[in-house]
Image (cartoon, rainbow, N blue to C red; front, side):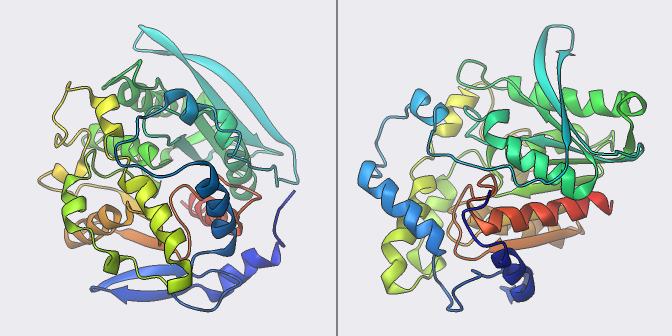
Length: 356
């Protein structure tokens, strides 16, 4: 099921272009049904209108763990057309505990293909396979490859370094069990969104000497654990929008901008917020990174740090593809069947995985 006409996906693909901003080439994915610049996607506007009637943004508002873990408003649909087999395994992590790991396998799978390990987002405290299942199924189908989805331990019950340990252990588990899993251990892609992108970066730091990760694919990634630097840099001028859409764009930007303390619940003083293991931008050198794709929405506060990372990584010789979905905010990727941009972005990810 889709809440939009599938032709909108093709329109995004047809309208895609490359634009140089501040000397950096960015692949631009326009709003499919509005040819104006600096507009919010109409579907994002409708969702924002609803959210604005039930919740106001307050920089000093208390964080509700339950309210963020139980999200009936986060809807997604199964848009696959073939059978996707789903396995669930309990995998031992360093012999100290077990975590749930889901493996999605496409119909008529041929062994020896690349594999995606996907680390979900959710401020290091929320998210699970139920929220991301439809996205994983679709990438699996579109790529013809297996997708591995670990249910890593969540903060605040399990602070740093629990999530990182679990995620990196699964990278090693896939590498060591590649033959049994029927995947190519030399073509491991690790991907994630938001906090999952941050965990992807943590895995990259731990993988620096191992080189088990062949490619990284990140959506609106957490390249930093504190927004203090970007709050100082912030200006409405960095996020231009037409007047009639301004209230919606600012609402979506501030949703992330005002959530800057979420990293505190994850780190809990156990490591410096600028330690490279949690903030890859603190690495003295990035030239060792594998090829990457960095995806972000036009009206996502994290776009500032995503753009900074792309610029720096490229300057140090890393092959980075930067993609921007115009009119979108933070968290669009998992809204499968709700936003055409979600479907189109997952097709892009699947094609990259398939072609490794």
